[in-house]
Image (cartoon, rainbow, N blue to C red; front, side):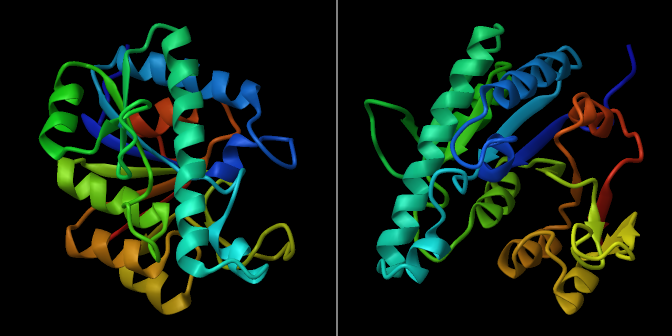
Length: 238
């Protein structure tokens, strides 16, 4: 078996990725695929934490456009991430992967509160930790959550799983001449306004020298390929 180039990673999964071919909600085939891939990765003795979005159920920015107060809308989005996290936990445990869900918004009947040292200990014991509830604060995205949690637990890289195979100069679904980048620097992402992560998350990664690898989640096996060091997607670093 090939050797992993990373030993501790944060996998960032968008809510939209979970909806698969559905227009809304959770595609359970996608959940099952993610669970199978993570089970394979665990055989490589890699510590995996997951930050999950909620856009497949409710996106705070969309709520504000429809007249919902921004703070309330953001909290609604955080609750959507909890639903996704519990669904992913179920899929992982179905294939024999031990997990813990930690939430930034306390709800003790459903999940543990986020405690940094406890999260690190779970990872050391071989459990997958799923971070939900965002940062627990409005005005911050789950991209920022991923950058924050990765920095806190000492992860080596953020693996951002998306619906496309990397970062492009413009939307490839709208512009056939859009150019795919293999490598980028943080400052280029910020200056060009490229949609890798939001500016807060990108700046936090830059400050902590934390690489981001953007890749296509829809192709099964890609998570393992990234961890084994295969050159897929786009890497962002200093």
